[in-house]
Length: 229
Length: 229
Image (tube, rainbow over all chains, first blue to last red; front, side):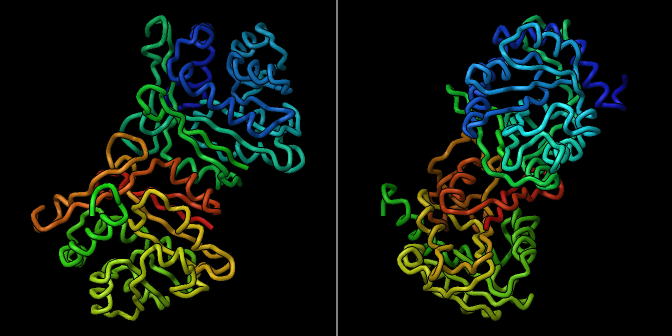
């Protein structure tokens, strides 16, 4: 896996980091998540009063478990077999499936259909996302029900730091519990605000809501949280 | 006029700065406008293929004159009598009226009705903008035609600098041609991105497009440019 194939490098890093990531998320080691963004996406999803939610890029499954406690029927999908295994082992009432984004593009209904919300929490890391996002709302076999919403949370441009332009960056997981030695760096594609808005439009969505969850102490914005239909 | 009454302080500063402002705009002294934002709002307005445009907070009238060269029928309104006078004196085919925003709130049709676009170029500086923006699209007597669009350009959060939260700031016009001695400082209300989005929704608009005109050399974003219907 080389830097010349970012999607493969992203997938490989999730598999390599699965145990460390599961430990970090479950220990609450990521301060921005604990302080703001976990609650923000939970609230944004529940604001739609969904009966069924697809947790896209569910990782070790915390959001699926959280939503299941609100009597939401949740299916979590992730491309990493190790993360799906960790999610399934934790139980919590949600269903977890190993599905890569390419699998959903090839067969949009692979995780089921009729979802009121598709949630993607810091889970859209590739450059070309139009095929995936379009597949989610494809009439007939796409997972989103008519009138359903896509809820996307991503890093805030101000939290990501300069330069303010679309492009590949590297996440080294520095600062997470355990130190950098345990982690395999991951490429991810940074998008400006207007690039996110254009992407959603290009994939057929209208932007319904845009929030900026902030650090409760400093007020600094931590994420962009978009709801699109 | 005290800082306790920002709208009055804003109005007073425009009157006091009218001559200096007119000179600075017409000399191209504001680099961000010359390099990016003038062309950006012109293109955003023309993208709607409008027959009639209301230039809200037109100042000395450059945008109205620019649009008039494209055979658009333009009415420019501004609360500053001195700026409207400067605009009218320059001619250029547009019509200019002295109307404060409060006048438009009280009588939404005061500048006419049936406009395909209302453009506000760095012209929304107050804290409470819902009454004005709602009045623009009021069915029956609001200036916006059915299906018309509001095009708003405002300072980009990254260009405005920290702190990233809604609140009053002071523009001292430092750096503009002539030095600070000639200028009367002006209060203006900074809004975060999500605050702009929420404001537009609260005033009854849907966000259609959001762009970030950038400095052609550095790529740094200079403005937010929203089209709402």
